[in-house]
Image (cartoon, rainbow, N blue to C red; front, side, top):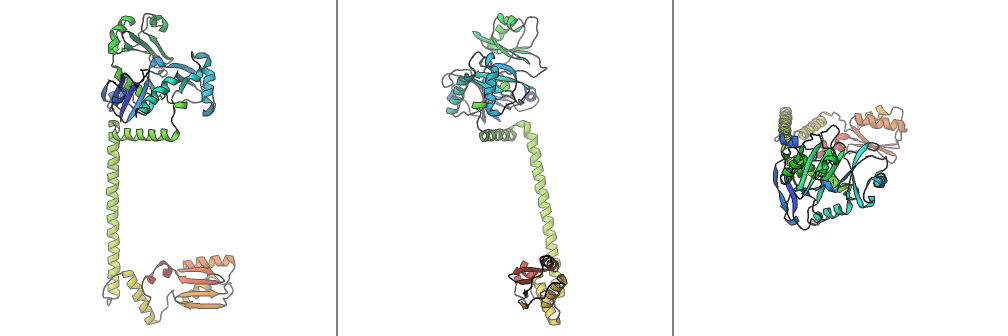
Length: 421
């Protein structure tokens, strides 16, 4: 999935140059080590451009500069989501330099009530204006991430120097938070850097200045790579009033997941595996269908052969089962034998299943249908009669005070599909 990662450093995004990076594999949770081990994270393009000239991508990620954020460690109160914002204002009121209602808050990923979590705070009006400017330009932001975030417990402290020689900033990232100070001699005392050997990274424009001030070698890294690394963060600052509704979030996440799965090289083996599995199932279903068709055709040929062998006078075989039924019926009539569609077997089935029921007042038999009028067995006996008739191959129904009984084959379409003999 191609991501356009925008740095929200300019107070007015609508004018001036905007720093950006266009990269593959900038999904949450994909770390730099994962990218170096084969994930598709190639940076397609980077630089600065006016808002209208920014390249197109599958998603837009906004990065909030470190100096625009403050970080606070709190115990998350056990309140419902509707009251959480007010609860955070009350907890952080004494720690903030601005009024809480003027700030936007965001909780760490997977924040559980009652646990110790990080809260990020920034100017609400500034962030809202930036996102609205991007929205108006047709660049809907799907995620808002911090440039730097507190490190997990047990991580080594890192130093990052960003900006320009006349406006350089030092960012210290550790498990105890993120501190941002102007780069100068005072940072040693302010951050306790004397005698420490934390790894330091710097952008090319300020690398020499960083080595001079920090008194140590620094690793040079491009600012665009810093944007990509920030986009891989699990953080999403678009919470509370900046969060989209549930349906929109779900649709965006589903779209992002599908795009990442369909286009990312990291998922290529899974895509090939799924395609092979579908192909194997299709081949198996076709083979099974062919086998079933062959078996059905063989059974039809057996019935056809049986019909011609039993009744050689049949001139043409059109519907072997139907023609067989007709010939058997003709033979039965010629010999005087009865079938289950005749009166005697129907009466015998009724008598067998209702030995204690009262006799009907009238018995009618026409068109292979038996009607017993004035026949009203008790409910228990009626249920037993219905089940018994069904087991004997008859269908029955109550019509007023009469029972109507007919061979099930006549109702199901059996030999009644053609003319009866």
